[in-house]
Length: 312
Image 1: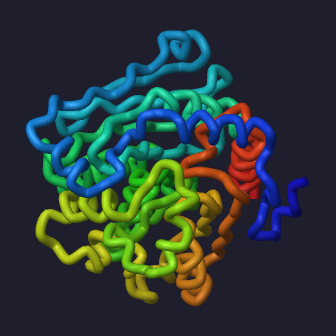
Image 2 (image 1 turned 180 degrees about the vertical axis):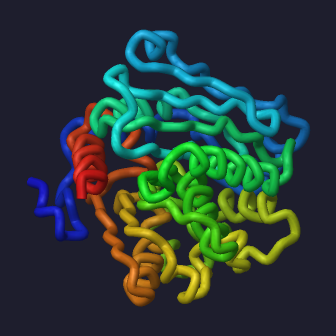
């Protein structure tokens, strides 16, 4: 049974479908090698990965807007009924090194459908083929364009995993520069510390079917490109309290079998200490980015909470 919306724990036990999907994940080939050496080998001389194509059926279900910005494709899905009261800027996950996955498109579609909003998706360049700064520049440019055409107070930044990092990092850059802030921030299983420095993460790692500390630290070092991983510009977990205080209302969703939950809890404490309207929703035994597993009870709950967040 789900608890009420004021509680951090939304699901005390995994649904049957979630259990089945975790069984399948455990027996599937991992997206990333489960060791740092394997990750480094995979990144060396690889063929540039391509974004999963948007399903053609979306052109019948939504109003699609496509354009090029700084050499990258930017796709916006609008409801057939017309733009809603909010516009979402969504960054997909993939450790900064993997493109839009097939599972991301249905998640985007569900947010458009369930929340009645437009969602803009930048298909940003990958590290190491492009520097991490190219991802920042594109994020800044897309947001500036949206803010010029929409009330920034009605823009919500969202992303999953590394995309959650990108959404938060964008908001922090705006806070530092005095730019127009978005109205809300939604983070799906965000990667907040590229160095994964908290020793408590090790206790969660055996339960995480997808993410491993050594692999992510190697990935984080690749993305940081010589910068200190505890630099707030690299790892938003370390942002100064006076900067955090400028963030809009923020909601975080993370599974308890996701190593990122440790830093999500720490970040929640920092946000609340800075006076930010912030909540963290946890789901027992749920894996990384479980909200993309749309048929599950847990994913439906996330979408419902997101809809309520936008209705406030």
